[in-house]
Length: 251
Ligand SMILES: [Fe+2]
Ligand SMILES: [Fe+2]
Image (tube, rainbow, N blue to C red; front, top):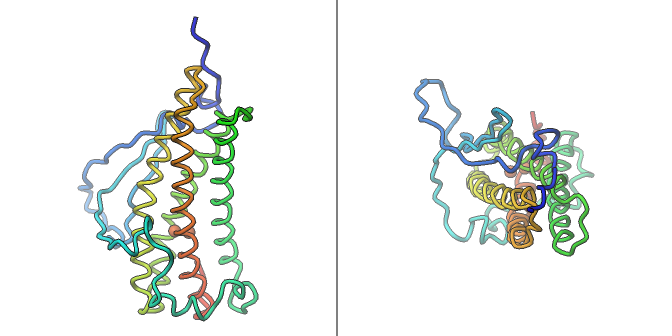
């Protein structure tokens, strides 16, 4: 007789987000005639929660991006976009008179994303090593949290921070095009991360060890970490120097 599926909270529909039910959907065309934000910063996807399930909504916006500055291949900001980053080295940010509480909070959100991703990577490695004790529930809970929080973070940046900051220094216009394209690319990778996570959770729910699925998830998690680190690092070196140079507030 088959083993009963492990009762992770998602499977019981209780505490954790039901990651096993994340699935992509394509929204119908918007015919409402409502005013939209500029296309550059229009939200690409949204996560909706309906009847106990989570759904992705995608908007199909094509952003041409040349190879050297795409998130998958970029090694850092090009020299011509480092005019402020070079003037304000990272080690001096917090001591500058224009460094403010909201900028500090924003940097702490980035740190939190890095820490949560490191936790799920560590948990997946521990599962593969046979050392994890609550892998399914923790994976569901923390990955669901990560997906939703990072998505919301990108929306705030797209709709509030980027339009506000890009108007302050015309020399950095292309830097904001890079950040916008990064968000598009990260959405794709977020989707892949959700899919790989769901494959592990489904296998665990069916009483399997999910070793093969967890191995593929680990590769997806580590790939995501590479892209996220690149994006956060460059984004910080664009935004914080603007705050310091112009005394800008994140509002
Ligand atoms: Fe961002
Ligand atoms: Fe950010």
